[in-house]
Length: 77
Image 1 (cartoon, helix red, strand yellow):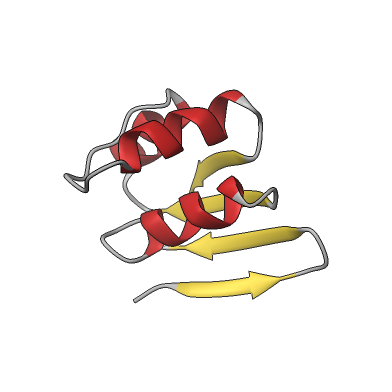
Image 2 (cartoon, one colour):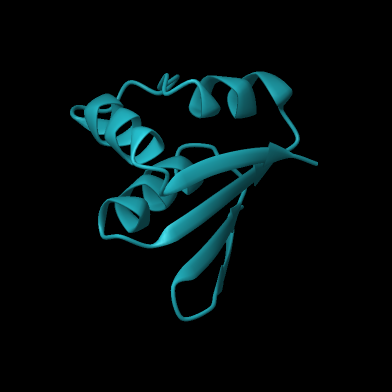
């Protein structure tokens, strides 16, 4: 289950699974500063490296773009 916390331009998405990761990427793509948090260190490392571990059309391009522009970063719990 993902949880989303909002401030004016910053969002924290807790849980980077099939709902949380695409949600984080879409918000980051709209210019929000997004921090994604997950207990799985491999997921966190992949996202911070700009790699998408989910098979969702176009998500990999959006994720890489968001990370490279500094709008998306992740952290492990």
